[in-house]
Amino acid sequence: MSVNVPNISYLSSMKFSEFYDKYKDETECKEKFRQIREQTGLSCKQCKGKEHYWKKDKWQWQCKDCGFRTTLRSGTVMESSKLPYRYWFAAMHFLTVNKKSFSAKSVQEELGHKRYEPIWAMLHKLRVVMGVRDAKYQLTEWIELDEGFFEKVNDGKVDSEEQEPSVNKRGRGSKKQAKVLVAIESNPETAEDKDKKHNKGRKAGHLKMIVMDDLTKKGINYEVIKGIDKETVVQTDGYPGYAGLKDIVKEHKVTVMVNPIEASAVFPWVHTAISNAKRLLLGVFHRINDKYLQNYLNEYCYRFNRRHMKEAIFDRLLVAAVSCTSYGYEKG
Ligand SMILES: [Zn+2]
Image (cartoon, rainbow, N blue to C red; front, side, top):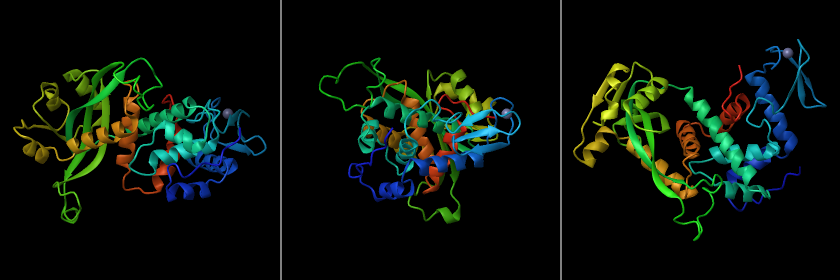
């Protein structure tokens, strides 16, 4: 498959042309992908052996113990994909380059690829990987926990949600609100944090956003046990679904809010995170199918959680991409 020279005017950023200088061609990307796989460690599917020979002519590894061959893509997010490595690299770049999201349509145009669906699927696979990676981290210390309601569309058209809504499409499907549990580390600021531009009195740490079937006590407790360290202080409003938290965390602080000013003092970060995520996602994707909302939130959280990393965020996603297939299986 030939890889098109991209039309960089579409998303026109210097960073993108720098990116293309670094990963000039397919071989360059494959070589980088191989290095990252070897750094993260290979495990033979057949005998779990860790030692491998690299067979350069075939772009495969061969297990030193049993001779089993591992292809460059197997066991990674690219498993079963026929798209060029360079597309995947470009997609990872778009997902991490700045605070914005890019629609599959714009990435497709940027890459000059004929079909929309494979590009759309590639981006979603990467968002799944982002979620798997972030799920490994448990929030600690002081947490703000709240629920957000995101607009969703459920019209059974799985690949329609990112298309520009045309006149015909408008109004089709049922508009509903998806329930999202949002938790963010929010620790008191130290003296040196005080000069920062956000003067919220608290410092935001790691963020999680989880699409929920319901906001019952049972469902909330399940997610809190999974995603939040038990030695934490969790701050919520008076919603009854949070009533079970006192049994599973160190301290549950409940504040029943009277007005928005008070709410922003008690929850300086969780409300900001919710409204920023809504603005960003709906601004780019217009119509989000409820089946894929979690993936978009994964992307938002992944970037938020690595907001201080600069360029390293791309390499981190590359590490996640070689460690995990798009169905969430993580190799041993
Ligand atoms: Zn083996």
